[in-house]
Length: 424
Ligand SMILES: Cc1ncc(COP(=O)(O)O)c(C=O)c1O
Image (cartoon, rainbow, N blue to C red; front, side, top):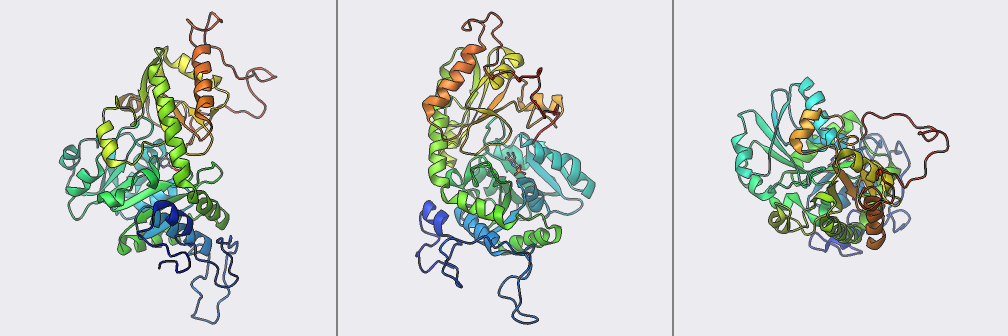
């Protein structure tokens, strides 16, 4: 339903929808901003009647506003919110049944890979990982049991792309195309407009945008799919609470201006890294040296805020760089206003075997940057200092591999630290 007061509609611009879609003024009080309906239950007018809500696992007004807002941003009709991106991935996979088969992008987020290889097979659903950058190859790999193609584009962390429209155009009617659109965000890429059936997000990332909430969403344009996912959502109950829904709704209002800032900074950082002789490789779809830059220009309205790179000098130097930045925080996750640096092999993708990582190009010297919205000059200065300080030929220290972070007072570990084998 269009919001009569604001006059927004499906044809309104992206930011108008972000600010208004799903967010009618409260009919009881006139509150302009959707309130946090912090309630588990709703008082019924009489047995057998509700005012649209009866229990917050099933539906909650704050969550519903956020679901409608995000569906509008993805040019979809139905949104189903989950307590995390992984719960949303599992929600989309709930459309499958025993005996079904998924074809998935080889280089996906490590947690999705873990769900697909360790959990879904226990329910009789198996997955083949393929190179989805070639649309023809995707359908050649399909079997009579294939019911879903799972795409992640740009992929995490090597930023490879696949051609959503070319893949969707050739899909048989009994196969669903699902796209994890977390890296691009709906501001830069809208898979439903390109023919996909489902879009999944870790809303933890760009959509909420401030690294203060975990969440996920599945969006579709088909009522039948949405009803089945909502059934799973209610049965399993992995739903966001009203506060998390509110933070996500609020964050998404500024998605367009944040994405422009992330992408402008990421382009500047990628170009800076590409000019350095002590950087072996830079991965960013906005660089014209990216092997799929032409596809990125066609399929996306911008190239996102994630840049990966390999400093020369191998893993020891890469780890020293990651430990040396003073603005970029050493942390998993991405998509927040603050810049982060991580080692995918040691952190986000540690659950893959070394062989799987090698096949995907997730080498031990690869670093992933989530570029925030700070000033580009400060981010470049921080990286320049970390690279200079760890470059034996530029550093005044003969060993070169020196962290600029202050060492902890007691030994090597900060208070409260534990060794972590796998994160994210
Ligand atoms: C591309 C992608 N999809 C899904 C997820 C899972 O999201 P969450 O951590 O919110 O469960 C992540 C998390 O990093 C991700 O990067």
